[in-house]
Structures are given as structure tokens and as C-alpha cells.
Length: 220
Length: 137
Image: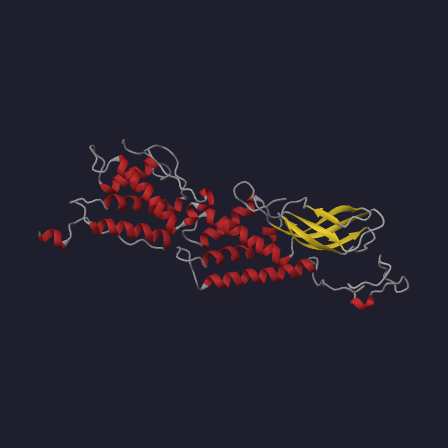
């Protein structure tokens, strides 16, 4: 779901109050860049894309179904939580082409976790096609980013070389917080922790099985 | 041109009408023809694009709106930046060589136009009295 009108109106009003003489069109233009920076650097807009791996086929195209463009590939897992390593072969906004590291012998249904950002064209009214939770959750961060970037514009009525960098720093701090919150699943006291790599094994005896018959170079 | 009834500066005729008020040019035959004020208006818009491209680039890209008639055609400028356009229009019109209008006054409106676009405050307009040099001659 896209950005809600009441959230957008509040953001625009807050920015306009802090930027005397700024145009709404200019604020919207900067808004796209700030939201793109926030989502790209924080990996906070994930989407699980289901697809089917077929025999001896390693190349697939992933296209987001819920808007935005794919910036990074996370994991590809099946219903048994078995991981299928892959690399991004090509970026085709809003899609990506991926290449599985190993071909599979059987057809298997998997889901790919991807991380997205905003993509052009914008929605009606030149509003970036961002997720609906973005402004309720991170409105102050986005606002600081827009205000800071516009204050750093040259020779404008709202130019403010002193406070601009401070507001941009608030954006960067917010991006760092969002990245951690997303990694920890928005849990209070949660942690981005997993068993260390040497706990894994290639044999069934060790407790954590892998789908690959031989040890590989990627650390399993 | 008949008197304007719009005070929101949203159409060509409202800009020209407000400029005529400042220029004290409401009684035909006009000192400033409609065509000359349209040229001044379009020139002010071009200068505004140089100083504040955000007023136009998001909507028009590298094109610029221009107006060839004093009509009710809408002018796509956000409300907070409409008054500077009036001052720019007046300044360009006053720059014409007129014996009764000192150049200082034209320059003062040009400064108001530019300062309001790129600054916070507008400088005051110059008085309409003749300059000391004109008084002595």
C-alpha cells in the first residue's frame, strides 16, 4: 500500500514550515531522493517473492509484486528452510536477474527475500511509490532528510549551511536505526544473531543438514 | 484591458492587472501596452527559472510556459512565489526609457524580485520622487 494522504500532508506541511519560500514541487523532488537513500541504505523494505526452481535452470527473473525496485537479494529458501545460494546477474529496474550457484535436480518451490527502494515513475501527484508504513514509522527521519538536503541548496531563500548538515546527520542516524530495527525484526531486546558458521556441518549427524552433497567453497 | 477582479495572482490577467496598479497605468490609452507587459511578464518568468529552477523544472522539464494574451489562462506558480513575479514584471516594464520613471525605481523592483526569490526579505521600493540629479536639471 502506498503512502497515505494524511501522512504525506503532514510531512509536506512540516517541511514547508521549516523551508520558507520552498516550492511543494521542489520538496517532492527531494523527497524521492531522501526516501530512496533511506530505503536503499537501511534494507527496511523487504518482499518475499515466490517462484519455482526447475531442473537444470539457473537463471530467473524476479519482479516485485508490491511496488518499488529491487536493490538487493537476500536469501532464497524453500519450505524446509533450505537455502539456495544465488547471485544477482543483472539489474533491470524494477526487476533483477539472478543466477543460482548450483543447478537443481528437482523442481522446487522457493521464496526469494529481496530488499527494495522507490522507483520511477511516481504516483499521481508526483508522490514516490513508497510503503504505507514508512511515514508513520520514520516521519521525523524523512523530514530531517528533506529539510537538511534543501537547506544545503545554494542561493535559495531556505539555504542554511549551518543546520543543513545537522539535519542530514539526523537522516543518517535514522537510517542506521532503521537498519538495526529491521534486522532485529522490530523486537524490543531482539538481536540479529545466529549460530556461528562453525556450528554448521555437511553431515546429517551434526544436526544442521544442507542440500549439497559435497563441501563447497562458500563456507558450509 | 478592463479592471481585474482576481487578487490571487493565478491568471495572466491578474498579474498584468496588479502590475498596472503599481505602474499607475489603469486609464486608457495605456502608457504600457498589453503586449509590452506580456513581454515583461514572460521575461520575468525566464529570470525566475534561472534563480529558482524548482518553480518550473519538475512540471515542465526544459520547457518554459509563455503567454501571448492577457487572458484568464492559469499561470502555474505556487502562491508563495507569485508576488516576486509581479515585481519582476514591473521592473522589466519600468526599465524602458521613460522620462517620468527614474531608473532607480526600476532597479529597486528588480532587487525586490530577486531578493524575494533567493532570500527571505525584500528590499524597500525606491521613492517615486525624481532623483536629485533630475531635480537640479
